[in-house]
View 1 (spheres, rainbow, N blue to C red):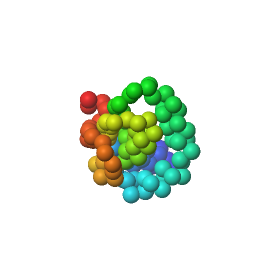
View 2 (cartoon, one colour; view 1 turned 180 degrees about the horizontal axis):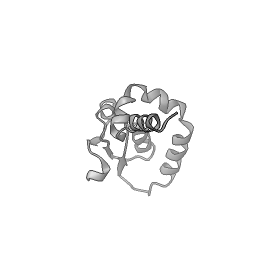
View 3 (cartoon, helix red, strand yellow; view 1 turned 60 degrees about the vertical axis):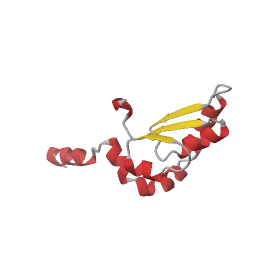
View 4 (cartoon, helix red, strand yellow; view 1 turned 90 degrees about the horizontal axis):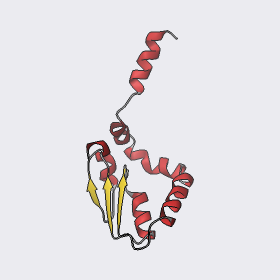
Length: 107
């Protein structure tokens, strides 16, 4: 393969992270389910480290908010904020939460 083709392929593969999330919105549940063991283990660590009496949770890069909902429920969190710039992911979010549709670097 010549250098021009390599450069062209790299340019095509570079997507803004938010645009990439928007593209996989419809496939996100299946992807998340296939990779469930690792995020579940991380969520378990988070839940066990929630300080007693905590009432608020901020999830930066929350995707569809599913993990934050689970953590909030188990941890008895009363107020959850989802920080997610992807309109596709925000559209999939359900349950009680405040959504900030922005990038973390813009806060």
